[in-house]
Structure formats: C-alpha cells, structure tokens
Length: 307
Ligand SMILES: Nc1ncnc2c1ncn2[C@@H]1O[C@H](COP(=O)(O)OP(=O)(O)OP(=O)(O)O)[C@@H](O)[C@H]1O
Ligand code: NI
Image (cartoon, rainbow, N blue to C red):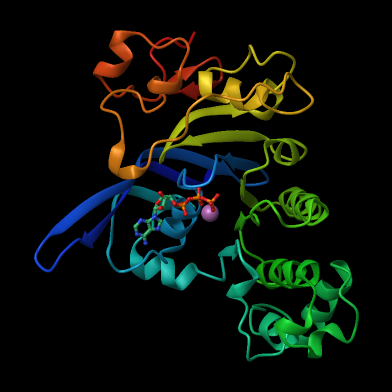
C-alpha cells in the first residue's frame, strides 16, 4: 500500500493587487502521485514548477492565503490540517530546501534532540551525528558556526531521528556544492532501504536517477510524467512525455540539446497543454484542451500524442 497518495491536488494563492482588487493565482493543478514504503520517488522540475509547494501542501505549511483542493492520503487516511500538524516532524519529516530552517538561536545538538521520538534523545542525536560525520563538538555550535555542508547534515539528522515513515527532501538549489547534493541523495537511499518512503525533490535529474525508483516530472505546476527511473536510458525513447525526453536529452552526457523557450509563469498559462508552446510534436488539438494524465506502459503521461 502506498504510504503517500496525492490525488488531483491544486493550490491557489489569493493576492491583493490594489486596495480593492483581489486575484487568484493557481500555481499547482491536477497534481497526482504516490510513494510506496521503501521507495524513492524523485520530483524533477525546473525552478518555479511547484516542487516545494507540493512538499508544503503535504506537510500543511502553506501560507495563509493558499487554498488547497484535491486529496492527500498518508498511510491510507486522508490528511486534514489537524492530522498534518500531529504528523509533522514525526511520521512525516522534511529535509528543507534551505538551512535557514534551522533555529539560529539554538545549538544544533539541542535542535536534533528535540526531534527524537523514541529512545534517549542524547544517544539518538549522537548516533545521528556519527552517522552523518558531524564531529563531537558540532552539537554545541549554533547554525551560523557550521559550514553549509555541515548544516545540511544537521537538517538530515533532525529529519531522521524522528523515525518518520515518509521523508520529504527538498534539495538545495544549484549553486550549492554538488558533493552535498550527491551526499543527500545517498542518505535518502539508505533511509528508503530501511523502509521509509522518500519524496526526493530535485533540479538535478542526473543525481536523482542514481537513487530513485520512480521519477515524477513537473512542469509549470503540474505533473507531466510519472516513469520508472530505468526508463531514462539511451535516447530517451522509453519516456512518454516530450518534456521528460527533452530534459533527458539536455543532460551533458546525452546530446546536451537545450529546449528553446521558457516555462510559463502561473499568471500566463496557455489554455491547452502547458508544454505545447515549446513542443515539437504539438498540433492544433494540443492548444485546444488540457490533456489528462493517463496510464501508459507502466507509467503515466499528460500528452495526447504519447504512445
Ligand atoms: N506564497 C506565494 N504566493 C504566490 N505565489 C507563490 C507563492 N509561493 C510560491 N509561489 C509560486 O508558485 C510557483 C511554484 O513555486 P515553488 O516554490 O513550488 O517552485 P519550485 O519548483 O520549488 O522551485 P525551486 O526549484 O526554485 O525551489 C512559482 O511560480 C512561485 O512563484
Ligand atoms: Ni523549491
């Protein structure tokens, strides 16, 4: 049974654009995916595609002006705001995108100890710091006294001492040390092998493919494909959606072919398929209607032409 099931999730923000004018911006739509225990599902998409919002919707930490539609089930039961609060940091843990999530005024050892749920907090914190190569004096430091890599490892420690059944790792944005990115993905694999379900959010298809079982490809606030990781091979012809194939082909070890154009902003989405304006295979029908996600060859794709 899946540990996490996201079904037709949409997120909108209400914004005031003047004293009396209010607009609603839909930033996530029709998002569906599931994660099984012991499995890593990588969420891949460029900046602004909705990856962090999905994580925040699952955890119930979206800002107050956000409206959520659709259902999220954890361990077979629908998540309500009350249940999200009860599970957050316990059964469902986040490795946040930024080290700014650490409390700047609290020693990091104490922050990790406060996340421990079973066993002796001091012992569990020490074990986690050993596992993630944080020296014995690291626990007494404040976040600003740690290097970026060490702070990331403290975040992973805090997420793992909780013994969560579902881990959501929101990877640091590019520009941060690639070695740290690699390290985080390997840590996630270890946790999945111990039985946790992992949602691994990443810009970096290549590093995610090292550890993921399945890949969800996001574009402009929706999922366009859900594929087994092993479909990302050779010329990409096993993939179902033109955008997934384009991402694959854009990798340096493949043809390094960039895709012309850019991802549309939430306020300027095309009426039909969101990828149609950049798609080589687009026809008039693609611009007429938003395609639904459909099952295809052991995966799913949101494209009327996909075979
Ligand atoms: N509080 C907010 N109010 C209005 N729009 C928002 C808000 N938070 C996020 N958005 C918009 O929602 C979209 C998705 O944002 P999100 O942070 O999920 O992207 P992301 O895929 O995580 O990007 P990155 O890889 O840069 O972290 C973006 O267009 C962003 O501008
Ligand atoms: Ni993000």
